[in-house]
Image 1 (cartoon, helix red, strand yellow):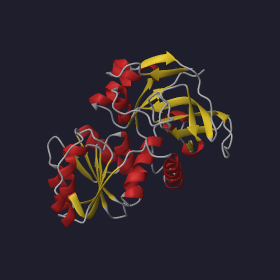
Image 2 (spheres, rainbow, N blue to C red):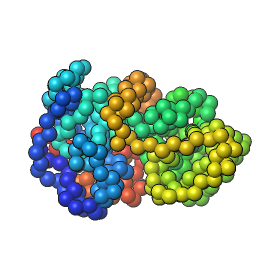
Image 3 (cartoon, helix red, strand yellow):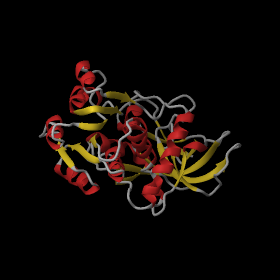
Length: 328
C-alpha cells in the first residue's frame, strides 16, 4: 500500500507519499481500507518531530479515518468484512489501510457518505469527552469555545446547542464568526478586535462562562480563569499559544473553579473505547437525526498532505480538511 511517511521532521514538504508494507489486523483489531482521513493539529506537531505516536500505534500520521472493513482479527465481534465505518486512531490514517482496535470503530451515521464520516471521530470524541464527560456542561449553562470555526469548534457549538446550552465563540474574521452564528453560536467575539474576558462578562451580566474549551494553552490561561463563572471548568486541549503560563491561584480559589488538560491520542485503549462508546450513544443519534453535522472545508488527495498542512497552518479554513485516499 501507499502511506504518508516522515523520513525527517520538518515543514509540509517533509511529508512523503511512499510505498510501505500492508498492516494486518491483530487480535481485537479490524483492518480498514481507508477512503479518507482528516488533518488535525496533532499531525502538524508529529510532522515537526514534536508529537510521537504512542507505543504500538502506526508511525504514519492521521488520527481518524473512514473506510471499509477488509479483515477482522480474532476476538472481534459485531463487525464484518464490508462494513462501512469511521474510526478514532492512534496513528496511521494517512494511508490506504490501517489496523484499528475494534472498540474505536463507529458506524457511518445515517445520511452521511464515507467522505463526510472521516470528519467525525476526532472532533466528536474530543468534544464529548472534554465538554461533557469531564466538564459536565449542563442545559442553560454558557460554553466558551476558542477557535469556534475549527473542526473542534464547529462540533462543540452544535453539541452544546443540542443539549440546551448557550454558546460563545472566538474567531479572527467576520466570515468565521458568521459561520459560527449559522451553527447556533449566541455570542460572537472577534479576538483580533475584542477582549473575550470583557465580552463574556458583558454577555453574561458578569456571571462568566461555566465551561471554556481552550486550544491556546499558556497564552490564554490567566484570562480564561478570569472569564470563568463561579464553579466554572476550564478544559485545555491544545497549546497553540505556548506551553508555560502563569495562573492566579487566588482567582481560581475564589471562583471554586477547575482546570483540566487532556489529550486523546495517548489514552489507554480502555479509555478510548469508553469515549467512543459514549459518542455512539449520545452523539450519533443527533447526527442521525440531522441535528448535528460535520463541517468540511475542502478535500485534497492524500498524496498532497503537505498542501493540507499548509491550509491548517494558515488558519484560513472553516471546519475540517479531508485527505482522500486513492482506491485500489
